[in-house]
Each structure stands twice: as structure tokens, then as C-alpha cells.
Image 1 (cartoon, rainbow, N blue to C red):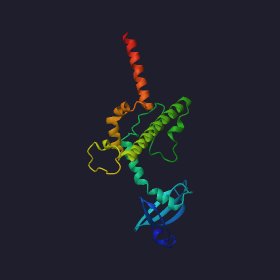
Image 2: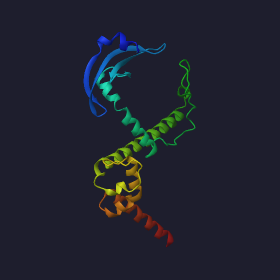
Image 3: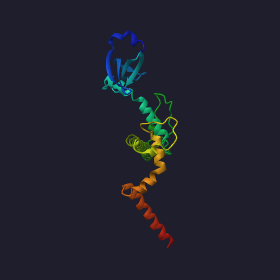
Image 4: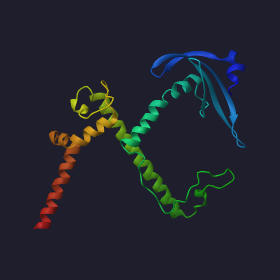
Length: 222
């Protein structure tokens, strides 16, 4: 594949696209090739030359144009940063859902070996496994929503709420604070914000729960 940068140099095309927040000029060559061992799959390879650096990108989506693949690849750093924040701030991957019906999985499964899940034939066990997977996916999805809310707060209110800058930061941002700063601020002040805004639906729900708890406590005392 690396030799193609030399042997097919005349076939490279030039385009200008948005890459890492800037308009960049790149050269590329797009090829659909079979890839794999024994069982082959057609993949779209995009050979890219950018500022003298050569890269080879691969896509399983054969409908994507080469410039789109290059542009989407430029988002990888933001995606990895989001995964890091989901792991460290909202603990999106700290789920602890399991089932005794779940078989032990083998990461190093050979192609000729049957998958352990295929050996589960009992319908109740299969349903338990499905519920376990649904619980895991639901947990991660809720954390994705939480991360999105933290990002929206950071983008919209960083310049309006000085309280977001309440903690020491080694490398503070003067424009938009991080998700971790927003989460720390909310942990510190969220109940005060609820008390200051009794008209909010969530505040009313919390207050109704507290009132019901007081009624039940009084009835037990009497």
C-alpha cells in the first residue's frame, strides 16, 4: 500500500476541505480493494498526502466520497477527547450489569470456533442476556445525554457565570470551560439552584417527594 504513493503518484487528485478547523489542501487517491484472510470484504482505502505527510485511511462505507472520509477522520481527536470525558467525568463506562446466564467470552476466538453466545439455547437465559445488554446500553446512553448537557452548559454559559471558574485550573480556558468544571460546579451548587428556582419542573418533583416523605414519617410517628 505504501508503494502506491510513488507508483500511482500521477493519479492523485487535489481538493480543499475543512480539516482541524482550517481550510486545507490535500492530495488523495481512492481505491476500493478486497481485504481480509479467507473471508474477504471490500473496503474503501483513501491514500492522503497532507503537508508532506502520507496517511492511509480505511472506510467500510463504500458510499462515502474520499473528501468526506478525510474530513470525518479529522474529527477523531474530538471524538477521543469526548470518550475520555465520558470515562472520567460522567463515568459512562463504569457500568456493573451482569447475568449468570452470560457465557464467558473469548477475546481470542478463532474463526472456525463457534461464538459462546451461540451455545445459549435456553430461552430464559437468552432473555436475561438481552436484558443485561439493554441495561448496559441504557446506562451508557444516559451518560451520553448527561455529557451533552454538560457541553451545552459550557458552550452557552461560560461567559455569563463566573462561578464556573471557581476552582483552580493548571491551564484555564478563557473562552469555554471544560465538562469537568461544569460538573464540579453543578455538584457544588445544584441544590441551591433548585431552591432559587421553585418554578422548575424538577424542583416541583423533588419538593413533592420530600412532602410525601414527611407525611409518611409523621404517620409512622403517630
